[in-house]
Length: 235
Ligand SMILES: [Zn+2]
Image (cartoon, rainbow, N blue to C red; front, side, top):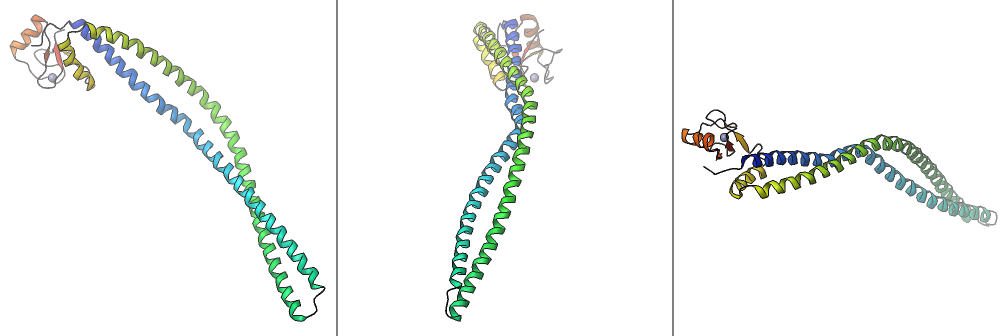
């Protein structure tokens, strides 16, 4: 036997706590839902950033190759002018081979510059596409995110109100019974207060001794079920 329970207040506390638990569950889902809505946008934003960085890399790479190309072209021009002034066959063929080398290098650099230009264009094209996709996705998401923000604010308000109600009910509750109830509540053991069903616990259907059934039904006392731990009362 636990004692005079002030049952109505305790039942009111339990329904407040069950509502609080639901409000908390829902509040915890919102950030996940928001992340879900934002996921596609985040993916696009990441690609946009990566493409932007790649664009900058190709631009710098191309500038370096272009300056190298200019150097090679000058070198080649210099060799070609020297060619007109050489006196020996040995010097002539040495210069020719330098010119060949410069030409080969110029060809390689021109190829590299062309492929960097193509890469640059590809990034620019994709960046333009992403911009359009992002605008569409953002306006799609805006409505959903607004609804979530509204719901979140509403949940916070209801939670705050229920917390005030709960504090008043706890203050009015019998301390010893409250402790028993609170242990169940912390374990999210809802319902923690369960009506007697016949001569058994309404949750685990464990039978209670006749003496205890009498105490519950005639004296309005609460008993902790030995089977499952809930607090049993008479309706
Ligand atoms: Zn039980």
